[in-house]
Image (cartoon, rainbow over all chains, first blue to last red; front, side, top):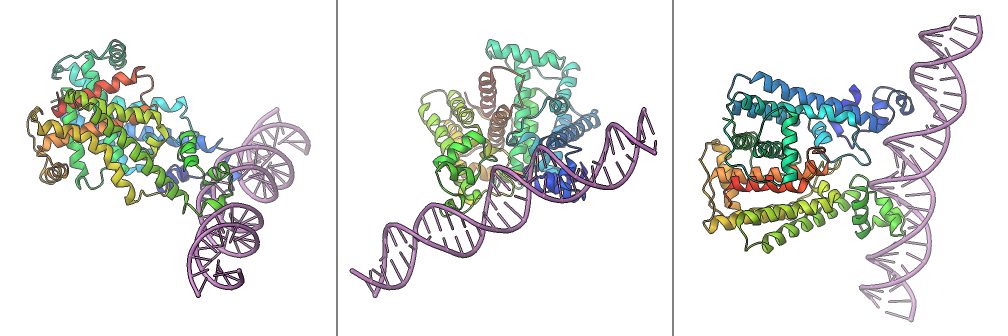
Length: 213
Length: 213
DNA sequence: CGAAAGCAAGAGCGGTGCTCTTGCTTTTTC
DNA sequence: GAAAAAGCAAGAGCACCGCTCTTGCTTTCG
């Protein structure tokens, strides 16, 4: 696993070969099949490790900045995710980039995958419980089906939030990962040299829209 | 190229093999190297085609809804991008997902890559020129370096926009592609059954934040 | 002590991208 | 019109990949 992690960091998920990790640990390729069922299972293990890694990074940030402003805490947690992504670009793309060829992530991966999301939502949740959340500007109509789903999502995290509030979080959530992905895949090239400031400003704006202050 | 496009749609970018497209057109693998320099060049051509495809889809939507509300036009353009992504998931992930192993997108791809972004920004630009854009709630300080870059970005599209306005667009832009990516990679599984409504609502919210109405 | 299990190696299958050489056909040039 | 040049497709081959199956050695267990 160490060798696999190292290779993932160096050549990325698609360049990771079972044969080369076997070579690195001084084994013949067929021998490693005793320990790992297939290349896909190796990837699955790496995915779970990566989810746990980014998840605990986010949790730690949320925990560590608990005494600050809700908005600052939100920003700190988001920045922790971005920092992790910059430090482990291949791991990040393995989690949030294109899925590998015929690979379908097994159910083992969804639980650790929710940790980072829960860390982010916990910031919002704490603010809501403490009554520090600025109420949504105006409740809009989002359609019956979606409204039902949004209510269920709020129930999942045990918070009484309006549809608009849940929607604001989903927007902030996807914006966060969208920008990180764009930064990693160089899609924002030439736009700015100060990616950290750009990220910070957009997350602040999204946090503001969610009612944090 | 037809065969390659077909294979890309079926098995995705990482599953696309030069040998198999050679088989499909009744050639031996070495023969196709006369027409394409490498697998990477084949991918580059597919990328450019895809960028043009999604770009014209967005442009057409922006053009077709020019008589509606700015907000409705924005939503329509964004929905066009999403529809294209759902129809061509592998192409979308080739453009906006993880980059292929050692592949670095050549400069030929950046020009067609900007079309879809320009189509989106044109909606905002037209609204601003016509004076229909609600001014940004409060101009915040984003730092000197970022502020300079944001001003340059506004100049690129020849519009006199505040830093906060440019930032709002960047947030909306990344949110859009973030959500589409999450939907395609099934990261939103179990959250809602009505992905279209979710997308529409978040895009409307982001459009509202940009000052569209 | 012997049987059973664990472990690593080797050979091999079909697949990949890519290169180089060999021919044949078409086009250009004189 | 013949000769030279260019275009084109095939074949063999290299190193790599994931994966399977068999063989043999070592460790553990009954």
